[in-house]
Image (cartoon, rainbow, N blue to C red; front, side, top):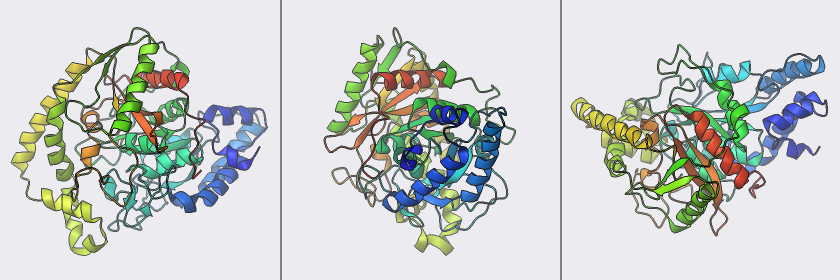
Length: 470
């Protein structure tokens, strides 16, 4: 097999080749590392490689298959970890000069579980957004992570490197974190699948700095791979008191489901969001696929939608103000937009925060009550296609020194509600840039969102699409 093709194989394909002894984990680890070395100059998706970790795990997995041991769920499967997650003994910079050179002495739970499932850590992907603050793939310490469909274009953030890695064949599994769209946005921009599980399904540690809005989940080329990675990472953990007590299901084994009769809400704008016409056209065509599968689709304008913009423009800056202490030493080396944003929020009071929090809880309650009437909600994943990554907004949108949220209004409601949500590739703009459809489910219905994603994937396959920078 051509070594450059190995990095595009899915988990089930690799496992079958291992069992047939047509490929070995050591061969796979070496091939993926070689591919990363070859492609990195074009995309800049990796903060660092971890060949020692990968090859040690590969040798162990190879022994399992050679000696007919019992393979674990992800035995010999390559994966990457986002550079905002702790990895024991591996430098983790959190995309900020204020933390550059940090070497954690412990692994985050999601990392430990991927190791325990038999995975091979290939390296740390770029966050490419200082402390994950924006949806644009550029950070002062790492530079631009390039969209694989166009050099210099935004690949989404903060899990930018993970989305690009999935798109260009750095193996099948890539961990992301989503505090306001940071799994779904990179999936949309890079043309891959991104799944944000129900909050607490995958333990999040350290606890997020954004009032428990962060979800840990996968970015992959297929829904099955995302289901397997979620299964490996999920389950309760004492370090995260918000983690769900329920053990993970066999998500990958239950993906096939009929969409006939499913009640689906479709909102083109949540009642307030601006959406570029080329995005809207692809999403509307995708919605018709669900109708063709027999789903009952109703176009809606949810009453709660228009309440979000004011809330997010208070909470997103407010939850980053803990970084103000870094300004005296590091401001000149920090993202100017990030600095402007936290300075904007510096005067917020505790009283204001608690008042707005009460309003946000009411907003979330409205979302859950709305979802009781539907199995899923469909919307654009993002309002725009990829634009230059040295800008916060596309040139044809209003300009602001820190407000990138204006083109990402579909993400944050479902971080606050804790709902499962995914971005599935649903088409391309006339310029050849990917578009994502967002599928939102009721809280706790992770399996349902994966099933809806798999049904769409079967109807409109996307895995054959490979970007030019791959």
